[in-house]
Image (cartoon, rainbow, N blue to C red):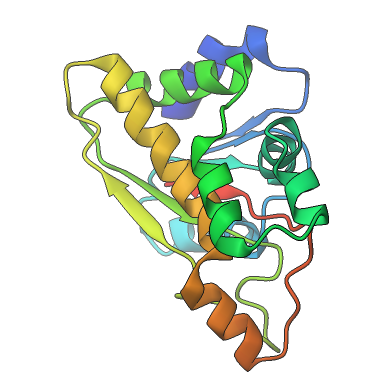
Length: 193
């Protein structure tokens, strides 16, 4: 059994049939996985065949982000034209569903003592015509505290910070520089590496 199959089995009863396990990759939620994660996933076999070890990857697909925006009233705020800095605050105050919290808790428990990197993998990130690499934030977590609640809180906050980074000053400056309009409903899943 792979490392991720152990994690997957712990939260399988909470799934709605949208989750998938694939060797060192686990996918949670519905929707797409984003350009960066998709490219890494597609090249996994080539990387392994070259003799490199692939560390476990967990992808929270676009459904996590979209559901988070909707459940927490952020999508409605975007439709009302709330300024991006206020949207960032709403994202940070939002709550994950009980199922999502259980999945995140299982991740921190399974990989306790191993650092976690939480980063974006947007559908439009790393495209050939408009590359977005370096625009969104990445957060590194030690995941080594004995308190499982603290580890869950740190992971949850890191994911929210990645979610909110699309509304940051630096990303808005880049969007303006390339004349890209930020849509109200944008799919920005986070990938926990």
